[in-house]
Image (cartoon, rainbow, N blue to C red; front, top):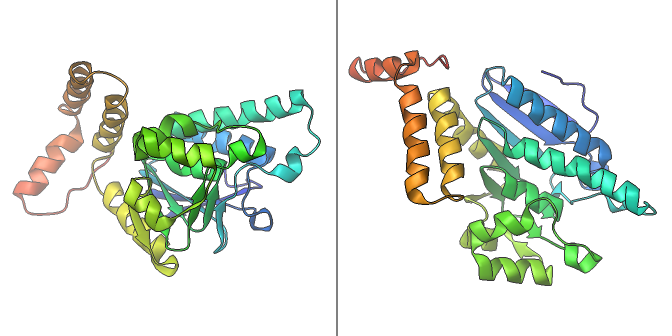
Length: 264
């Protein structure tokens, strides 16, 4: 797996957890073109070969910002064509993140504005530090959310709340994000990574194929009717029956020991 990124710091924690740190603290970890290309490359790589990574954590460098969204200094003076080209890169990065076969958790360690808030919505779920702030400010800049913000936010917080957040561009707190359903947990800043890693460890200790197929089935559930979704669930379930990990899980339970899953 590549670890020579310019804007991302990638670190393997034990054998199965990958921590991805947005690494532009001088710019509040804002997303520039390079970060867009590197996000796309990283998650496309995991799609092709997860290299036994079983959970990914995304966080930001520093104690003030998770990600301030698109880098407006880089965007200053862009032609329409340059803007659209950059956004096409961001779009592909979003799709690559959404397609990641293993669970992705955001550890939101500060401001998550614009595209940073959308990143917190594009992962599977998010924990936030108590000092985190969220906003989708695009309409205050003459644009609108363009990284699935209008698609994901209503599912997280409901349509009426999503309209209020997006149409006002008003920031809101970590506690509000928790109450509204955008994040799963609020932690003290000093324990955010510890608590996120603990959850990632629990996920990584489970049968990898079971986790991946359950993730896909849950993602499909909100897109189609329940009967069709159930057929998808059953297809995923039946693919797990002949795997070694299914036998290992039942055997370990009966032998009162921790299972040793191999992903096959």
